[in-house]
Length: 388
Ligand code: PLP
Image (tube, rainbow, N blue to C red):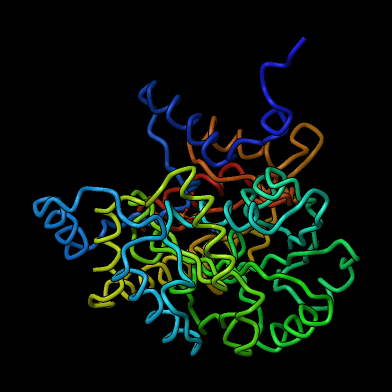
């Protein structure tokens, strides 16, 4: 008998944060007020000039299909942006715009992976990568990292085999906020050359860095452009998650292949969102800095309070807006897993956080500080109650 669902779909793990969100909604529907620190999106409104540009686009009937890869003015703005950030020049035919960076990551794995190709994935990690690699028939090879979770070339080297095709970099990282050191990127660049690896460098949090900026992989050496797909987008830095715009910069052959794939699945990203993104990139950047400064204040406040809880180990994030906290000392026979501890926190204290299991790293929780100071303070009180 034919199976109803394909093997790939049966083996697919749905997004754990979205699953948690439906549990939150279920409790909210019962009238329970939840402090939701599980979501990976800024709590700020999209800045007004960006929204106004979109409204103008609608009024001017800019509401039709665009080129699959995105409108040329937006792609030109992206080349300017990446030149400023990395010193590397891209042409607009080396850029593609899609429905969030998630789609571009999916396309990148589809374009590069053949059955059995190994992809090195440092963990803890955002679970989407692993699922997308599997969908592309690649093989996930995890690189377990220890706190403070900054990838070193020597960690990666141990896992390279003849089948290794791609190394995934995510700096600053979700869920740890860790930034890869420049000297390690230099060594990773040598590894990539030596073993002929492709690098997918997800830099979506690169505008949300605290003490020091994150170095982009391609900025290490201009020739790295030939083996790198840089992924970025406006969701996190401009509070634009719902507009669904991300982009990729890579050699033209790769972009053309991604474009061919995208032309058969979603075509272009929303014309209106593309105009909004253009405004975000060329407009005044003070909104980005303001949001980053607010995140930093919240991070520092949270760390100060959490450090007073002796059974929690907090690792200070250098970027992004998450704390990845070691809760192993809180686990015991009747609550042996971080996933279960998170369920208890949600059911008993009405605070939603994501368990480390969702990042292939049990024993930890991810607390998003993309939430108001007031709700963060209240959440700490409740976490403290469950943790003591
Ligand atoms: N990359 C990382 C590391 C993320 O955490 C996320 C979202 O959580 C994304 C990419 C996807 O963002 P978007 O598809 O909204 O651009």
